[in-house]
Length: 344
Ligand SMILES: *[C@@H]1O[C@H](CO)[C@@H](O)[C@H](O)[C@H]1NC(C)=O
Ligand SMILES: *[C@@H]1O[C@H](CO)[C@@H](O)[C@H](O)[C@H]1NC(C)=O
Ligand SMILES: *[C@@H]1O[C@H](CO)[C@@H](O)[C@H](O)[C@H]1NC(C)=O
Ligand SMILES: *[C@@H]1O[C@H](CO)[C@@H](O)[C@H](O)[C@H]1NC(C)=O
Ligand SMILES: *[C@@H]1O[C@H](CO)[C@@H](O)[C@H](O)[C@H]1NC(C)=O
Image 1 (cartoon, protein in one colour):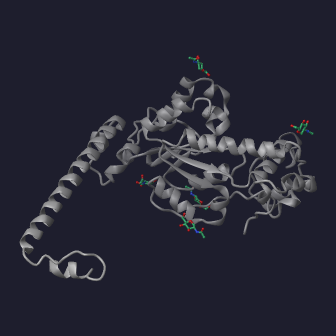
Image 2: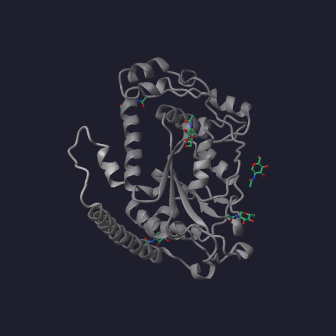
Image 3: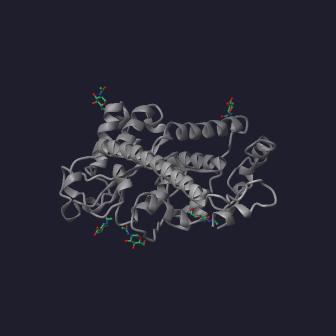
């Protein structure tokens, strides 16, 4: 047998078939296998040590009480068994809960994405809780707010209470997240909070949406009501009838600034358990929602939202000074923003 293997290379290499003692070769192989075995075993031991210690660090509340249910043990640091003070988890007390946060920027599809998540029976995503300034005045109010959310004690229209298996909210980068990133990352890693980054690839489209939305804040195009999200095509058409003028002088600089903020966020939070999503991909490819549900350890469901996109079709229909904008971006890294479009 050993001879066959060596004869194989008879053309090139000068490995001679061991004619004399196949027994010594066998011993050699045996020794090699043993050394490998010992190495792999010691490596595994080291890994297990790291895992168990971090597990013990991260374990919370009644882990012992509920443990033993069929869950993947490698996921343990990310699972919690909260005991809310405001209600009883009743029959779901031993269902693990996974805390998460959607990190995003205004007008990047996070409102729509959140309605999709909340369409899941077992998800509570509690909205933009840090839009209220007092909650992000200082680190201690941020952390105590997080504690309440992740202990299921936050009351919002999205609360599903006892049978939630993923609980979170959306957090805009300009809502204290970047200022206090060190403490927040520490909290996230300590509590096993999973991060969902949601960004928009086309930052020019985002800019149009920001300008139109802030215009509507005082113009109130829908019967005197300001709306950031709509549920009918008529409302969408009315809102998109306003075409913003974009400052073409500062445009490239503004886009650069947005891009920089995204990169900084990705860097600050890179040590957390995370997934990166882009709005455009979610629109084009519904399979991305399966990725998200798997990431949150949810039973798979078909997710629906009633929200409708406001600025559809070509971008040139949504910008008043299209020619200036085109000129400003021609030949820059952002030129493609002018043309990329949605398939649907
Ligand atoms: C999800 O959306 C569907 C269709 O709009 C609706 O019938 C269902 O009640 C929603 N489920 C939840 C949990 O919101
Ligand atoms: C933090 O902010 C909250 C309210 O926003 C305030 O009540 C509290 O005193 C502040 N804490 C510190 C340490 O500044
Ligand atoms: C999801 O919610 C349903 C009912 O609300 C509950 O029966 C089920 O156990 C929950 N699933 C998980 C994984 O928590
Ligand atoms: C456009 O941006 C430039 C440079 O930042 C600024 O000087 C100018 O005032 C802006 N124009 C308008 C109309 O806001
Ligand atoms: C859609 O998303 C899934 C999951 O991320 C990915 O595997 C697949 O390649 C995507 N399809 C297209 C056409 O991009």
